[in-house]
Amino acid sequence: MRRFLLPLSLLCVTLISSIAFADHIYLIPNDGSGDNFGFVGQMNGHQLFLSGGTYYYFFGDGGYSPGSTFGGGDTLFLYPTTVWTDGTPMEFYFPQTDSTIFISSFTLPTNGKDFTKFVEIGFSAMGISFDTGQTIGVGGEASGKISFYFSPDTGLYYPGNFVQAPEPGTLGLIGMGIIGVLGSARKRLTRT
Image 1: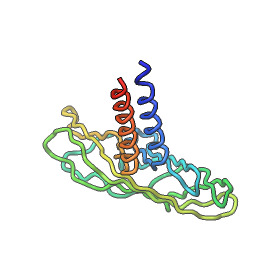
Image 2: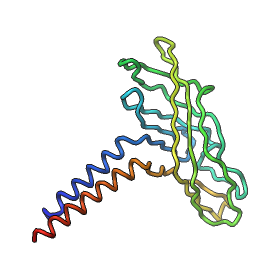
Image 3: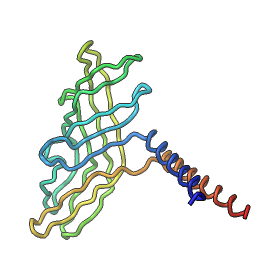
Image 4: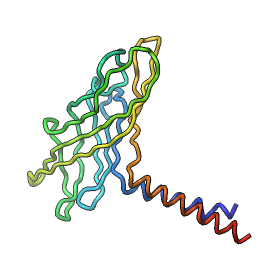
């Protein structure tokens, strides 16, 4: 059991550090509450957390007809958040007139089979400070996939969560961790 302790700890450190440096977009189907969007990233050397939602019809759990077009752009509703500017934390709000989200569009199949589609997601928003009126621009983009399942009972497609693909830097860090684990295992095997 002790022989697996070092490789396991190296792998955990590698995975945790790779996740810590990558911007990440979270998008789940809107269940009617409107809270289905999240973003974790870096801005001005500090963590940036954004949350909010989309219109129900843009990305909802109500189902989509076969042959219809899915994706495109629409309004993004964001909650106020703290952003560090010039070394000072400030509270910013994001008017819906200046906040948008985009998903690469495609046509849903008509064959009634479950499928997974690779998509690009991006967002941009203009924030305004409550105190000073200062404005900032925030945004992000990600590649990943959305799976759809077909319900024969309703004749509609239902989307799953957006699953972001790992960035090349993340894959590199994971690869270095695996190489380190394999090197450590090889060294231990040659000693015995």
